[in-house]
Length: 193
Image 1: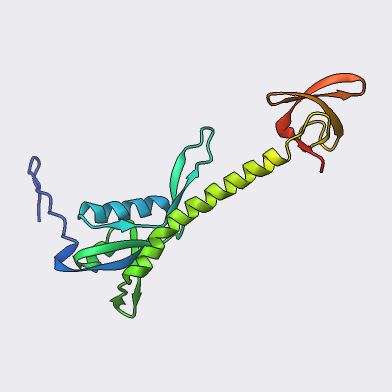
Image 2: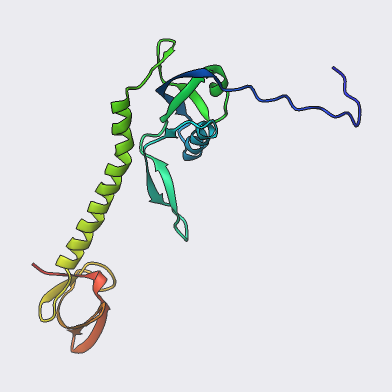
Protein backbone atom coordinates (compact mmCIF):
# COMPACT_ATOMS: atom_id res chain seq x y z
CA UNK A 1 0.00 0.00 0.00
CA UNK A 2 1.28 3.46 -0.86
CA UNK A 3 0.55 6.67 0.99
CA UNK A 4 0.49 10.25 -0.22
CA UNK A 5 1.16 13.43 1.68
CA UNK A 6 -2.03 14.71 3.24
CA UNK A 7 -3.82 11.38 3.00
CA UNK A 8 -6.09 10.71 5.98
CA UNK A 9 -5.45 7.29 7.45
CA UNK A 10 -8.36 5.90 9.39
CA UNK A 11 -7.49 4.07 12.55
CA UNK A 12 -8.35 0.42 12.60
CA UNK A 13 -10.85 -0.24 15.38
CA UNK A 14 -9.46 -2.31 18.26
CA UNK A 15 -10.37 -5.96 18.19
CA UNK A 16 -13.02 -6.78 20.82
CA UNK A 17 -11.65 -8.78 23.75
CA UNK A 18 -14.93 -10.47 24.60
CA UNK A 19 -17.43 -12.48 22.61
CA UNK A 20 -21.03 -13.50 23.33
CA UNK A 21 -22.68 -13.45 26.75
CA UNK A 22 -21.93 -16.43 28.97
CA UNK A 23 -22.55 -17.67 32.48
CA UNK A 24 -20.44 -15.53 34.91
CA UNK A 25 -17.16 -17.30 35.64
CA UNK A 26 -13.99 -16.29 37.46
CA UNK A 27 -10.60 -16.57 35.77
CA UNK A 28 -7.08 -15.78 36.91
CA UNK A 29 -5.07 -13.64 34.53
CA UNK A 30 -1.31 -13.43 35.02
CA UNK A 31 -0.15 -9.82 34.57
CA UNK A 32 3.44 -8.67 34.64
CA UNK A 33 4.51 -8.60 38.32
CA UNK A 34 4.41 -4.80 38.70
CA UNK A 35 1.76 -2.75 40.53
CA UNK A 36 1.18 -0.72 37.34
CA UNK A 37 0.42 -3.86 35.28
CA UNK A 38 -2.06 -5.02 37.93
CA UNK A 39 -3.80 -1.62 37.85
CA UNK A 40 -3.94 -1.61 34.03
CA UNK A 41 -5.38 -5.15 33.99
CA UNK A 42 -8.05 -4.25 36.52
CA UNK A 43 -8.93 -1.12 34.52
CA UNK A 44 -9.12 -3.21 31.31
CA UNK A 45 -11.82 -5.49 32.77
CA UNK A 46 -13.66 -2.67 34.50
CA UNK A 47 -13.85 -0.79 31.19
CA UNK A 48 -15.78 -3.81 29.87
CA UNK A 49 -18.15 -3.66 32.91
CA UNK A 50 -16.62 -6.73 34.55
CA UNK A 51 -15.41 -7.06 38.10
CA UNK A 52 -11.66 -7.56 38.53
CA UNK A 53 -9.47 -7.42 41.62
CA UNK A 54 -6.15 -8.46 43.07
CA UNK A 55 -5.53 -8.95 46.79
CA UNK A 56 -3.63 -5.85 47.86
CA UNK A 57 -2.65 -3.61 50.74
CA UNK A 58 -1.61 -0.01 51.07
CA UNK A 59 2.05 0.77 51.74
CA UNK A 60 3.86 4.07 51.98
CA UNK A 61 6.25 4.95 49.19
CA UNK A 62 9.93 5.47 50.01
CA UNK A 63 10.20 9.14 49.23
CA UNK A 64 10.86 12.36 51.09
CA UNK A 65 7.10 12.76 51.36
CA UNK A 66 5.71 9.20 51.69
CA UNK A 67 2.41 8.57 49.89
CA UNK A 68 0.12 5.56 50.24
CA UNK A 69 0.24 3.13 47.30
CA UNK A 70 -1.72 -0.02 46.57
CA UNK A 71 0.62 -3.01 46.37
CA UNK A 72 -0.41 -6.57 45.37
CA UNK A 73 -0.26 -9.21 48.12
CA UNK A 74 0.07 -11.91 45.43
CA UNK A 75 2.11 -10.30 42.63
CA UNK A 76 1.31 -11.76 39.24
CA UNK A 77 -2.34 -12.73 39.85
CA UNK A 78 -5.41 -10.77 38.74
CA UNK A 79 -8.86 -12.28 39.22
CA UNK A 80 -11.67 -11.29 36.85
CA UNK A 81 -15.31 -12.24 36.59
CA UNK A 82 -16.08 -12.71 32.89
CA UNK A 83 -19.70 -12.04 31.89
CA UNK A 84 -18.92 -12.54 28.20
CA UNK A 85 -16.71 -15.20 26.63
CA UNK A 86 -13.11 -13.90 26.78
CA UNK A 87 -11.03 -13.98 23.62
CA UNK A 88 -7.76 -14.99 25.25
CA UNK A 89 -5.55 -14.27 22.24
CA UNK A 90 -6.71 -10.62 22.32
CA UNK A 91 -6.35 -10.27 26.10
CA UNK A 92 -2.86 -11.87 26.03
CA UNK A 93 -1.78 -9.32 23.40
CA UNK A 94 -2.34 -6.47 25.90
CA UNK A 95 0.99 -5.08 27.14
CA UNK A 96 0.14 -5.63 30.83
CA UNK A 97 -0.80 -9.33 30.36
CA UNK A 98 1.66 -12.24 30.39
CA UNK A 99 -0.73 -15.19 30.29
CA UNK A 100 -3.85 -16.76 31.76
CA UNK A 101 -3.84 -19.36 34.53
CA UNK A 102 -4.59 -22.66 32.78
CA UNK A 103 -4.21 -26.39 33.01
CA UNK A 104 -3.10 -27.76 29.66
CA UNK A 105 -4.76 -25.53 27.07
CA UNK A 106 -7.93 -24.74 29.05
CA UNK A 107 -8.11 -21.67 31.31
CA UNK A 108 -9.07 -22.63 34.87
CA UNK A 109 -12.47 -21.51 36.17
CA UNK A 110 -12.14 -20.59 39.86
CA UNK A 111 -15.00 -21.50 42.23
CA UNK A 112 -16.78 -18.59 43.91
CA UNK A 113 -15.91 -19.66 47.49
CA UNK A 114 -12.20 -19.42 46.63
CA UNK A 115 -12.72 -15.94 45.16
CA UNK A 116 -14.53 -14.84 48.35
CA UNK A 117 -11.55 -16.08 50.37
CA UNK A 118 -9.12 -14.14 48.15
CA UNK A 119 -11.24 -11.00 48.41
CA UNK A 120 -11.11 -11.32 52.20
CA UNK A 121 -7.29 -11.44 52.20
CA UNK A 122 -7.15 -7.67 51.84
CA UNK A 123 -9.43 -7.18 54.85
CA UNK A 124 -7.43 -9.67 56.93
CA UNK A 125 -4.14 -7.98 55.95
CA UNK A 126 -5.54 -4.60 57.01
CA UNK A 127 -6.75 -6.04 60.34
CA UNK A 128 -3.34 -7.64 60.93
CA UNK A 129 -1.53 -4.37 60.12
CA UNK A 130 -3.84 -2.42 62.47
CA UNK A 131 -3.24 -5.00 65.24
CA UNK A 132 0.54 -4.70 64.75
CA UNK A 133 0.34 -0.90 65.02
CA UNK A 134 -1.84 -1.14 68.14
CA UNK A 135 0.54 -3.63 69.75
CA UNK A 136 3.54 -1.39 68.97
CA UNK A 137 1.71 1.59 70.51
CA UNK A 138 0.84 -0.47 73.60
CA UNK A 139 4.47 -1.59 73.96
CA UNK A 140 5.72 1.99 73.64
CA UNK A 141 3.29 3.24 76.30
CA UNK A 142 4.13 0.30 78.61
CA UNK A 143 7.85 1.06 78.31
CA UNK A 144 7.41 4.84 78.68
CA UNK A 145 9.52 6.22 81.53
CA UNK A 146 7.78 7.28 84.76
CA UNK A 147 8.85 10.08 87.10
CA UNK A 148 11.12 8.87 89.90
CA UNK A 149 12.03 5.60 88.14
CA UNK A 150 15.13 4.52 86.26
CA UNK A 151 15.14 4.72 82.46
CA UNK A 152 17.65 3.69 79.80
CA UNK A 153 18.47 5.57 76.60
CA UNK A 154 17.82 3.37 73.54
CA UNK A 155 18.95 5.91 70.93
CA UNK A 156 20.83 9.16 70.65
CA UNK A 157 24.13 10.34 72.12
CA UNK A 158 23.36 8.88 75.58
CA UNK A 159 22.46 5.42 74.22
CA UNK A 160 22.96 2.75 76.89
CA UNK A 161 23.14 5.20 79.83
CA UNK A 162 20.74 4.70 82.74
CA UNK A 163 19.29 7.76 84.50
CA UNK A 164 16.57 8.50 87.03
CA UNK A 165 13.77 10.60 85.55
CA UNK A 166 12.99 13.56 87.80
CA UNK A 167 10.08 15.10 85.90
CA UNK A 168 8.16 14.76 82.61
CA UNK A 169 6.59 17.59 80.60
CA UNK A 170 4.83 16.35 77.45
CA UNK A 171 7.43 14.36 75.52
CA UNK A 172 10.43 15.79 77.41
CA UNK A 173 12.01 14.08 80.41
CA UNK A 174 14.23 15.96 82.89
CA UNK A 175 17.01 14.13 84.73
CA UNK A 176 20.28 14.78 86.51
CA UNK A 177 23.44 13.90 84.58
CA UNK A 178 26.82 14.56 86.25
CA UNK A 179 25.32 17.28 88.45
CA UNK A 180 23.51 19.08 85.60
CA UNK A 181 19.79 19.08 84.92
CA UNK A 182 19.32 17.78 81.35
CA UNK A 183 16.23 17.46 79.12
CA UNK A 184 15.77 14.61 76.62
CA UNK A 185 13.07 13.32 74.31
CA UNK A 186 11.03 10.46 75.83
CA UNK A 187 10.93 8.61 72.50
CA UNK A 188 14.64 7.80 72.90
CA UNK A 189 14.17 6.30 76.37
CA UNK A 190 12.53 3.23 77.87
CA UNK A 191 11.65 2.31 81.44
CA UNK A 192 13.75 -0.34 83.14
CA UNK A 193 11.69 -3.33 84.25
